[in-house]
Length: 127
Image 1 (cartoon, rainbow, N blue to C red):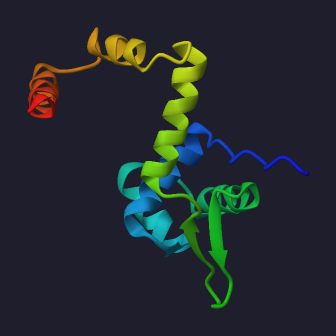
Image 2: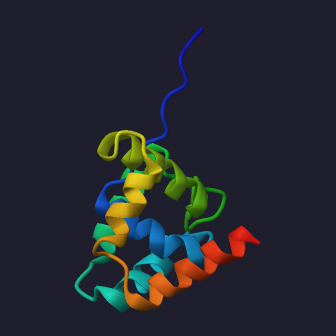
Image 3: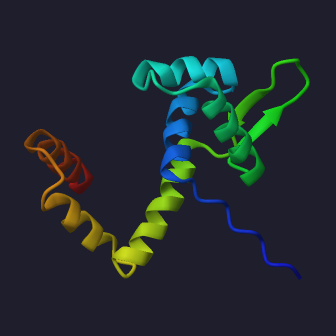
């Protein structure tokens, strides 16, 4: 019996591209390039194309080749990938403790407004 291949972990650049692609759903390289350029105008079409080809090869993107312009889509939903990456981070950096992750985040990475929102959610959960 073969062991299932673990889903690939995106690099920082691949994760940036996925954040651009998730709201689009499925898109051509041209459409993704146009969206990327809004935040990073120096990014070339060739760079986006190459990155998307690599991501397809790694299994991070699906590609529909039925039309002249290939259409790419994320292979995994945003929430699903975030959950998987978070589980990995908790396991590796916090010895499996979700509480330690939350405490570390609250110590310096949460604004007063975000803290109030978190408190509201915790209070609602008690009801």
